[in-house]
Length: 73
Image (cartoon, rainbow, N blue to C red; front, side, top):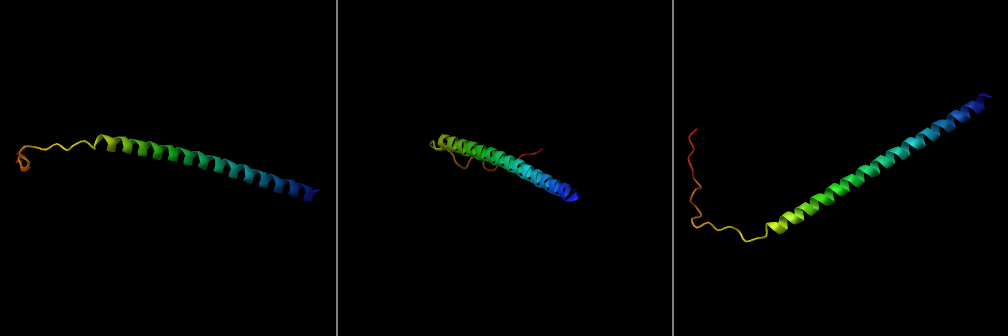
């Protein structure tokens, strides 16, 4: 009788291990999907930002004026 009990305990331990591994895998997949969405969003935002900044640069009439400003606090 104890061998049957040991066998069922062994099977129960195996089943619990499999359930934990499945849950861990599901969690990792969900985290991976979230990370991919975050990266895709960042790439899209970067693309939009670079499209906006391709305009002509502002040329100041006096390029060196204002570079050296003394500030007294």
